Length: 108
Image (tube, rainbow, N blue to C red; front, side, top):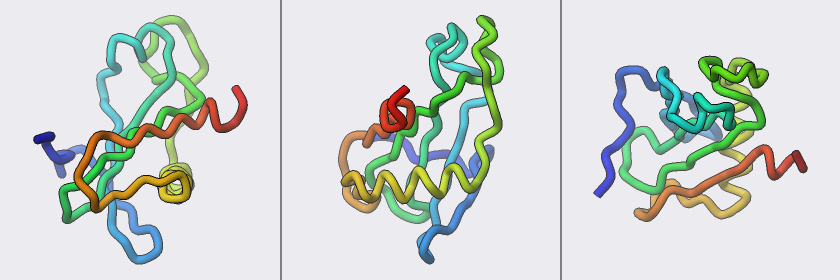
């Protein structure tokens, strides 16, 4: 069974009266450090279920190749949650991570 997102370091967001928590790793993964796109995780605040793993279309701020990066805003997270739900993410259902690739969705 996977662990829930930690409260410490995660942020709360409410979309359509449903509370979620989201988190970006402070330290990039090896692939993010190597210039791959930034990813972040979203899950329901008070339930264990499938995590939405969002891959953005920009680099992690700590990548060493100089891939352009930008801040992830709460409005970006809200759009990703809505798109994930439209694409079939069921946040209350147990299961594997639901991967949402925003770079691919935008035709990058």
